[in-house]
Image 1 (cartoon, helix red, strand yellow):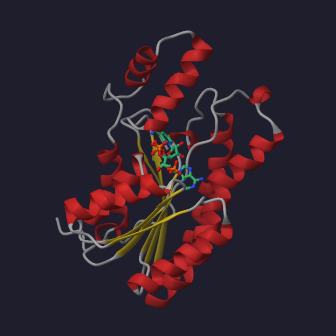
Image 2 (spheres, helix red, strand yellow; image 1 turned 180 degrees about the horizontal axis):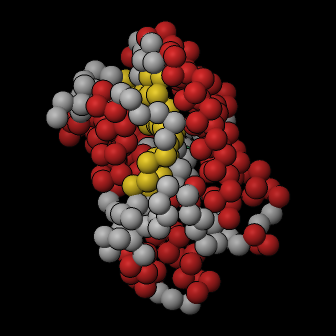
Length: 263
Ligand SMILES: NC(=O)c1ccc[n+]([C@@H]2O[C@H](COP(=O)([O-])OP(=O)(O)OC[C@H]3O[C@@H](n4cnc5c(N)ncnc54)[C@H](OP(=O)(O)O)[C@@H]3O)[C@@H](O)[C@H]2O)c1
């Protein structure tokens, strides 16, 4: 299937590792020009270099924190200068700490809102005018299965990410007339560093080993295994493609059937 993505310019935020890195790779494999970022310069540089080498893609990268609104603005300006346009923006960030409600602090609530909600606002503000200019755009937010089914001990993630769903629907409604499609993708348990961190945190609370945590998560899916980052990235790339041209305002879970509900 031709996804129609050749020479599109795709920003993938928080992409030196994990789901973001897999998405950046998958866009490069489809012939996109890719712009990447993360806080650690060496890490994002290495991820960009790997994509250039393996896919011959034109890759731009910067190191900054996605909670810094002016850094996001500078980055988007630099990407537009470098590539001449912006077609696709995948928002992403690290996850908030794993905790029950009474263990959380006000500072952690503020930080989580900045990390997993306001960072999406910052990117959307900056990329939408570029997309309006070409009457074509895709904004894809990475959240979590938690937006449909709250995850134990992830009260910060469960709460803050739901605001992204409201934002996605609002942006889809407001900017569909400009050819901009806005969707949310919710990963389930996917084998990345973040999942290892969660296994370690849950293991401390439950007394189970990290391996038992992974086995428990696999058992909780319909397909009886955790996902691979590439499986998640395939869904992101499809949503950004011409083949998903009538899909907007949706949340697509890539969770191997972890979510048990029907809508
Ligand atoms: N993996 C899962 O099973 C799963 C399930 C549900 C939801 N999620 C969510 O999906 C998102 C991505 O998860 P992942 O598994 O890919 O995590 P990961 O493997 O830990 O990778 C996170 C990436 O984000 C970058 N990053 C983190 N905070 C950043 C910030 N403030 N500014 C810029 N870059 C930042 C990291 O690089 P630097 O450290 O260099 O900044 C890294 O490249 C997270 O929000 C996670 O909570 C993951």
